Structure formats: structure tokens, C-alpha cells
Image (cartoon, rainbow, N blue to C red; front, side):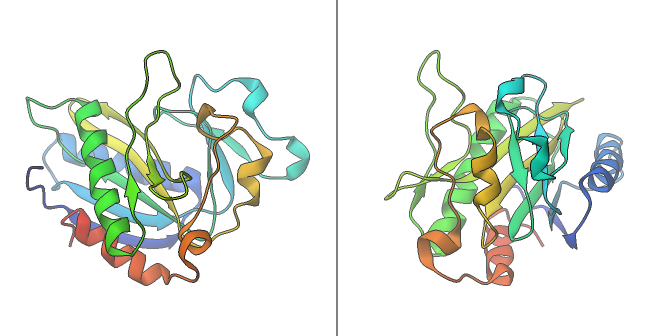
Length: 211
């Protein structure tokens, strides 16, 4: 894996629509070489986000009261909420890289971070004809703990990953996550017991060479 130091931005809860506005600004700055490669760590109030290919049947019942917002990233439905660590990656790719290459790097860096936190994890290759198995799974229980959805525009990446730390997992059961009806979403708290968000932030930042 190539060395790729990032500049770190950290926030607490940021509304999803406000975060998208700022992310768009950060991407524009990176495209114009006005800022370095950046990792933005934050969390969102409860919201479902969907990609352009998300089937209506995968959406939650509106009576649950959690808003659903369409997003420009790749991938299917994802839930965001308190207790989840979201990382937006604004990175200018090399001439020899594509977005799929970078997503694989993101997976491996998160596997490294989870290992340092005491949770063996793995990325998975997608069998032909299957829904994309982008993300990170626990090695022992086979549950999904990280969702990843990214895109690139003019050579710069946007969106990123969502790592479940200690939030309520129930909303995942109210919709079809990641286009996989049988997926079992998990969190660090479910797998390991109480885990401090500050420790997770620091470990993830370190895995991405972000400071």
C-alpha cells in the first residue's frame, strides 16, 4: 500500500445535508489543488441515504420517522446515526489509480484499524453476478461492520465509509442495507463490548496516516 498522508478534520454531529455542502466545497478545493488530501471524521443524526440504484422495496417504512436522502455516492441504502463514525475521503488519485483501486485501499486500512482495536476483520471479493461486497466484515462472526460508498469526479474522491461503533443497530433492521436482505450489521460494541469513540477516531486516523 502506498504512503498517502492525509490532513485530518474532525467534527461531532453534522446534519447530512450540511455535510454534503461542505464536502462538495472540499472536493472543489482539492480539484483546484487549494487543499491537500483530506480525511473528515464526523457523525450524523439518524438518516438513511440511498444510491441511484436503490430499489423502492429496500426503503424503510416512513412511519419509522427517519428521513431518507438520495446521495451521489456509489452503493445502496446505508443508515447513519449517533454512535457511528463516518469518514469522508477527499483524495486526488494518481494517474494509475481508479476508484475501485482506492476503495480496496480504504477497506484494507479499516481492516488494519479494527485489528488494532482488537477486532479481526476482512474485506471480501464479490462473486460474479452478486451484489457488491464492498465494506468490511468481522472475521469470526461474519457480520458487516463498515459500509463504504464512494465516487470520483475529475480525479478526486468523495463520500467514504461508515464504521458502527456504539450506536443503536435497530434502524438497520427497518430497511435492506447495502442491497443485501440477509446482511447482519454489527458494531464494535456488539463484538467487543464498550469501546470509546475517541479511541476509535484516533486509531482510524492513524490507519489513514491522517493528522
